[in-house]
Length: 446
Image (cartoon, rainbow, N blue to C red; front, side, top):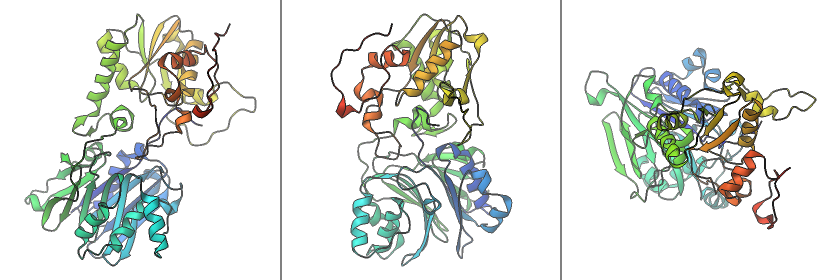
């Protein structure tokens, strides 16, 4: 079942100096489950050796109590994966763990390296053997091949050779490294659990989102800065810059769609951003209507902002089924818009005879939004006014977001008015690749 949404990337966590570090990493990954549902993994250290467990599936299914017992340690890093580069398979599950000339290290990566395959081709020509199809493994090879003698210097040397988006957590037997790319594409934040024995004895944690801190009792302190490498070891926390920070390119979709509303991302509360987007939408695109209805769950916060600014009542006119799995049995006799109906169901008593403002966060292909508008109309709505809180998506993303080809992005080749017409079903529904589009007259359906 394909919905008209961008797919998430990955989530990472790291815990240093806690007797139940692997359990805290598991809890953090559980909070970050929305960032990746294909696989998950944790690597821990007891100060002597590293232990790993990785599997396909969801965090709660993978890390049972017996499994967590096998990876007990005082240091741990974890990873939720949604593949943007590399196949969806266990061999690509992270963290990646290796024993190389720099010692035993484990690495977890959120983002996408745009020059990974060029580097990989060169390394393979020199005799390197890769065990995964993930771009992340390139970083491990660069660290191992670095001529620098210490691990921190080798990591910095490797990081200066890669390009793209990367928020990394890396661990050895007694240290944790946290790194962000110079443009700050992806979030990575630091938190602290105070243990009452001085700052050097506190538990330091890192995560893709601050919502991971709340469940483990950590306090958010700050973001890892673009171009910064933080190192946490027995001597405490240190920081250095492996590259000069460049013009910032924070991913807009963290605030629009990906991150949880209860997180602080790029120094700003996601809930505040989404409500502000809804308020601005009400100012730019007001309409006479009876109620505001969000497309759950991603459109809820923006709809709250729209309703507050416009003075219109907010109602849950669409109910989401939260138990839709990856597979389902479709009736032999095809049901129109079956995929959308499986996930969303209209509340007819609220929608019948009403002028509805329908709020969603984004339109990608346009196919699903069209079906949702039809769903609301068929529930008896007198008028449906679609409002989108994000600017049009006109190009694919190469930095870790799984966007379709440009020819499949409706805003890449249709104007706002044409998108409106498509969503309301006035114009023909066929998608034509952008390089095949011919100027044709579009007639209104009778």
